[in-house]
Image (cartoon, rainbow over all chains, first blue to last red):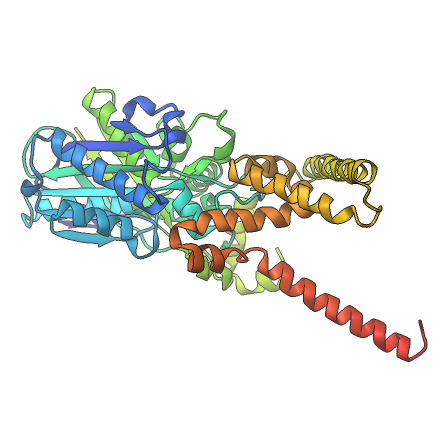
Length: 334
Length: 159
């Protein structure tokens, strides 16, 4: 049901009956390592290309989620998945392996919450009984596509972020036990004219702020409703900007409940990560792994995840276009 | 931000960019320069030592020793790139590794490794010069312009 301008309230409360997170070597060294179902020491996962490795990440995340729900892939009506690679081939190819009716998504790093919103919508409207969401990113594959070859020696500024190697999957169902998706706010595309691809946090922060404001306005809620409000991959730079911008707009989110997946996923002493994690996989593995585990343990009851996406392409950047951004927020309660 | 770029932005965008800029960590330019100076200097000293070895033990002339010296530095860089070490050194050193021949060797080796999966012709061959191509194009072009200048100045009797 539509509430306000851009918020869906799911009256049947679709349940995330199972979720899975698969990660790579940098994620294994991070503080959330124990929340992953599977961690790989080899960034190639034994495959002969990074793109195939990303496909493998998705396949493993989907298979693990289905297995954890004690289901077979035939029980899943729809697979909604996305990634960052051109023409989202890792998603399409892993959907080929799973052979489940497939809808490919692209929302840059906001795809995880875009997918979860759509899957919940399918289940809530009874167009599906079980819908699987899967999102992935791969550090080397993204570097190759968006920036320079992985072994190229250039000095990154302190605002740069590190693309997460990982895939998160969530199985949304019309019955069963688990955290429930109760509402989601679909964001507008916001462009503040920033054009530095090594400073995505600052480019995406206004989108997160816009969606957050819309969420609280549409639902007439106060931030204190939530135990945790997490942005997707703003990193240390963008998260600080978003927090200050919210304060400037008169929306005070207490600092102890306001966090960012890109900050949580890595340790501060991991030097390569600079300002924090980024990529579709960042919000996906942190939400579908860490946050949902904490909810199942009873540590968190109501959370809001705002996945932010920078909608640039390597070509748009070279053509001196700015970086438009989008953010989608999903409310999960148990 | 340049004035030209600023003109295209709306007041809200300008205000936000100012707001964001105040909250971003700056590049430590001075410290980066110092690091680049020492690492770059170290590479050049190493090059000098290799050149002296070629002169002393392999009976090269001072000028003739330059070519094998460059080759040795390139081989070392390519090996470091292949073993995945060079990018970490470069993150520390910045311009220190970009400016010497090490930077050029790294652009070619890294692109070749990266695109190996697309095959030897379209992958390695087609992408090897992806990053170093501009250096060659504009290097050759500026050499051409400079030589034209020199020829015309000589013809005019200035030089």
